[in-house]
Image 1 (cartoon, helix red, strand yellow):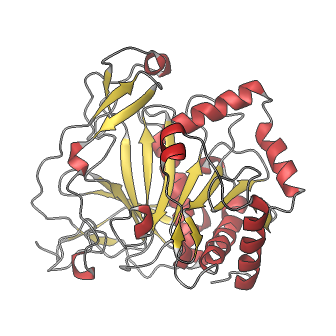
Image 2 (cartoon, rainbow, N blue to C red):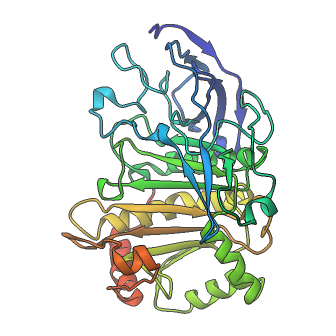
Length: 394
């Protein structure tokens, strides 16, 4: 591998002074660098000179006729790297001894997953992505029930590297870096929403081995689905059965409750009235926005330190880092844009310092939940932990 070959990449300046640079990896996958506004990096980036195999076939989806859920069968994900050492970190910048996925030093890097559940094929050929055979033919096609139905798992899966460091999480980043990641999320949400066949875009972070994380590197992912996910489908049904301003009603109710954890000018964090998990907190904007791409500069600016404070409060609950799933729920691409509001749902199975909640018979098989911690108790503990952290300025 020749690590000396470099290329100057053209720059696109985004909000908050974040700079985006675009290139491709050796097998044609897209790679984007998002540079901090105070970056020490220049325009030159190393070229990926690895000899990589051609990308594999796009996975297939099968319909579960009993529930209407589409299940992706992606055997290519079976052999993913599991908890490598720092010198074999596939998300670290490449070195002469580590032919990783990112060829150059970076602040934030986003690239197409090498073992995706969705894509690389799309409903129509776009860029280097081929057109899929047997692609979904719209939401009505996906809603139809029938035995033995299959479709190609079109879409895209991307990895978002928060830092070149080997360990950490979103909550360990600086305010400046967090703001760069938020800008990357917004940029990618907009871009992925334009891909043929994509119906919903989902940024998320899995943190901790208890969640099933396979890499300790600080990173998240973005899934661009070819369908509206089951959770969002149920949410849309609830809106249809109540009122189009359901999210505003929920926010107004929660802001008047004892379950508020953290307030800002543009965002409020609260433990929901019917929280399922021992630790569950939602973060919602005060104004309706369907997704991160639609947020204002002011909303993004406040989100960076506020979200960091929330995550650091979560870690202040115990002496060791708390495993969690940070899920950014966004409106579908083609439906519910005026009613489904962007919101974070952060959940953890940790119910005590040395205890985890496992989903067993009732919850796993019947989707019937029983909570061991009252939402009010959970909010009080988390509010105290967040207050102990104080304002986040760095």
